Length: 293
Image 1: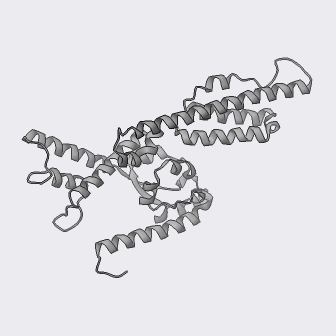
Image 2 (image 1 turned 30 degrees about the horizontal axis):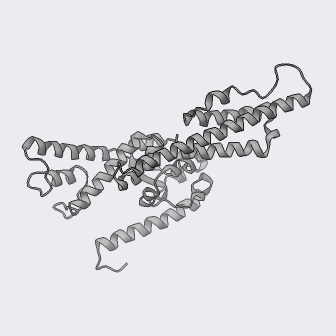
């Protein structure tokens, strides 16, 4: 679980306990609150999970109501203390991650591209996003090579051109080495070929009568298949927060997080249609600089 998301969730649960402690006194609300905290601690792999699960909020014998309330408040105080400890633990983890990156061990631009995924340990998405990053840079470094029809090369065709026989960018001194570099490029292209149509606002989260409205261009993005499967039915208000803002911009996702909700679908789609139109017009301007749009 992304430490940032875990911290946000724990802060919210802590605030609930602090602002309305007696609202958790009845068994039902208390069990629900405790389960949520334990779920976050487990997913965040926090050391506070075991002591938190051992906390008691009542007595083992009959006692006056005041004694039960004191026992509950004592247990809740311990729980809040452990939540604070977990938040501190996760904050240190974030700082450690930043220190590693600041050490200059990674290409800074690549790190910025995958930082959110690495922090959340979402390794499947990291692999596909690194492939996308590499193909984009290979294309740029090679001067955007064109096909016979004057179209921009992508995927296998791009790497075959850049690393193929006679290219200025061919790597290796011997035939075997040159073939190895070519196969490496083809491997990246294969990773990129695993593309799915993705509903940004998950189709399954809409009421059944409105589900068909999710199948519109403003709700679609094309992403790697493994990324799409890992997102599943996770709410947009959760998973979009974990994605690098530069990637969101490249997919024309509205930056206003208040729109990242199913009940804001129409507003989200309206803004994204405008962003898609702007992006397309900008592409045409670059492609046909002599045309006035």
